Image (cartoon, rainbow, N blue to C red; front, side, top):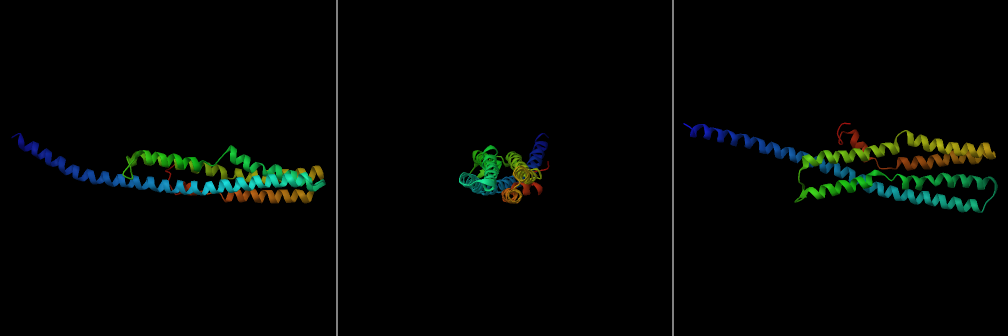
Length: 211
């Protein structure tokens, strides 16, 4: 009498496990795919951002040094124009030093986290790791939004117009004012437009979750 219920319970438990194990394996596979997708986006951003960082660091430093040298050997309005240009060019390397893009460090953190938990090339607990990977992508995306959002171009254009107005109003050099306002704004906008924003785009597609 007691053996039949026990056998029935064992049979039922076995049937349930047959259904649970494949479902769990499928969920783990989905989580791992999500982790790899996020990792690919963040790593691509980091690679492009490193190149972007050093290109603009070199460009900004070159503009600063070149215009400083020219200002030191010229006089009059030309000298003032190059002094103003050197001052605004200094903002490029200064901003990069004070606020380096988050993508580079975020990619390193994510890669290290995945490597630490991986076994035979697979994340140890992909469904625990996936939300953390999405948080890191969201952090990268937020930093890209800060760098490329409306405030950044407004600051770049507004700052160069302000320097141009200073040249015009203080020294009556309206030609130099126009060159500073237009040229400085163009360089600043080019810097913002060339920043890789793959994580920001992925966030818009929901890859970083809803927030």
